[in-house]
Image (cartoon, rainbow, N blue to C red):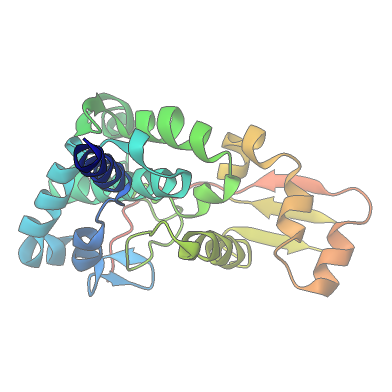
Length: 241
């Protein structure tokens, strides 16, 4: 009887370990490696050289059960899912570049992810944002447009790397003059449009930006009132040259 109980405990422990095993994102890293240049994507190269690997990775998303993952693993899973599906969609000829195509690109086209048919908007707004509760995800979600953040050349992981990846992405994004332009004489700051679209996530934009700017600029940004404006969003495809 004792022997049976020992075996049963081992089986339960093994089952728990299997459920907790992290999702394998190496396939996405293989797709991105060599096809992301300075944050831009070589879609034609992926279609030519890594299409089978990308399709296999996307197919693996359908059977995943993120509810069994740790919190960081879930965040990494939804980030990678979104970015991979954007790449697949553009490789297949879809594009967010025009106002007429964006509805289909983000809302109407569905993909099997974690057992459900989901749009890109579903992944971002129903799955990722409520889960992460972290505005830095907006600096790594890449919607395929030139005004989106730069895509990193590897999948996100769930270990300690995720925190450093999010922090580095925020610092890079908020020190890029295409995303943040500061006129200290006129006390005016012009931000990427995502700060307007996701005000509820960022809170007060100027103090948020100040956290990631050099110390002398940070001090000025935290003093007095600033006029906040938003730049036009460039929806043309983030295709590498």
